[in-house]
Length: 437
Image (tube, rainbow, N blue to C red; front, side, top):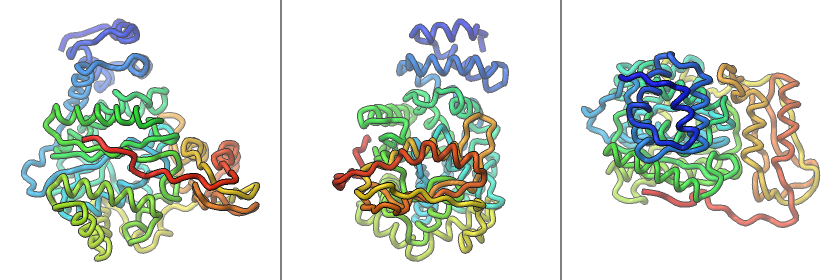
């Protein structure tokens, strides 16, 4: 491949010029090979955040990342190969119950997930709170597990989409997360590398999402649907609300506990509904269900019969984890201390700001502030009063599980402002705000 000057390419992108496929491919190649320092890639990514990419650039960039490593071939599987991806939210643990639920209904789910990005939690960080659970799988093991169980839940290996793995971590700590082009190319390069037939997207909208309004979220969804179409992969996107955290658990181990509860037939109603709604799309797209009612019936049966929970058990064992956590959640990491925040006055909860809760969770230690930070898997929040609830003075709003007093105090500086109490009950906000096909 030809050689280029990175300073020149940064300058051209800074000035809004279009880069060629060869130039973009060279950038990806050099950074993947560790021949380019983080500071130069950070500068380039910031130029993309400020100026965006043309459709041609986006296609070339995604293609270069996709082929920066190995691409899985699952064409020999008889089952439809479908994955789901969320653009990220606070308390969004849906992938964990969703994947085994759908796999139990006959869809093969080769799921490559990511770590926490900014204030949003990461599926890998959550899964790794299960003792022994391995998310780092080489491509051959990845294929073997999905062949045997119809499900695998892993991260990017050293050889699968290595460019995105490195860029993903850098974006988290360089202020370059909120870009439609960087988000869409990151997601689609990982997903296309899985060898899937179709992808169902959960595009979050609201304060706790990267897309703050429906218009921007729809543009992101349309961008990813377009990338999928250019690669012959069907993509369906649901736009879902993220103005308040999803469910009641925010953190890592505590979100796994809530996920297990969903697979046992419980769980908060909003988590359950989003899980079922996305799962229905996966069954319909894969031809497993004839209509939405049929899909819902199949999903309900997989929960009621225990098949979905068993599927999760099988995969935990296959990936080296201790499946006893499904029977005894006390085996998951637990924080040493608790602190409860109470309502200062009477009224109705009119807002629980997801962004504030998410940033507070990072301060508590549940997320990363630098690329090399080690998260605390045990800390997090249990939301005890959400939007619409009526509270009296002294009623509990949130229970905080923490290990370090300094981190608690830092989180509290923000957290108390997340709850807004008013005189009148707020109107309903639908969970699903739209769709793009």
